[in-house]
Image: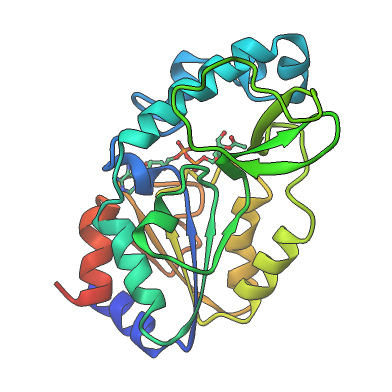
Length: 239
Ligand code: OAD
């Protein structure tokens, strides 16, 4: 199966990779679902919704500050590096990620659509300005904007729309791609997961890389079971 997948990848002139938390698991960043997943121990409605933030911004920030600390310690793994290398192979490539950890950037990927935002960016809830902030731990919670307003993490919470135009761009990339690589996502969160059936309808080959079956495994043209840090280098480098 891996041989077939490698051949599709080599023949494709345009490639999209859709990644989820699983690609960063080998870097030590916790996933959301499954064993040890964040949503096993924390309630999303208390930490990752606009209502939760309005109720208790300090509590929400404490959780994000803790996660930023974990991510700051993490390094990109061979899965991230393999995708960065694939982009440098001269084909058109778009990396669509649900991850907010920034590990794809650090691995050297360039064209990245961050569907769920970026944990290293802030946005003011009063004036709407956005800026990067990599300090960890943050000196004071909740952090403030220069205008005096409360800053929020630059991520997408449950019940919020994706950043304007981003999903359309991802959809367009998938519709014109020869291969969609779906890596380390439970394919449980929409609209990100809907890119998979969009790809199928457009005649794009779907290659899934995951340690487990997902609801999309059945429609994938090829489902490779295992850790992305091992499988992606094999797919990209042939080793
Ligand atoms: P999940 O935690 O839902 O799924 C992680 C997937 O990675 C699972 O299918 C695992 O089987 C797989 N996995 C774990 N380790 C792996 C490894 N080493 N190699 C390959 N696969 C592995 O994470 P996402 O699908 O990214 O959204 O979750 C989607 C969204 O739900 C997140 O972006 C976040 C969350 O709530 C928001 O916060 C808006």
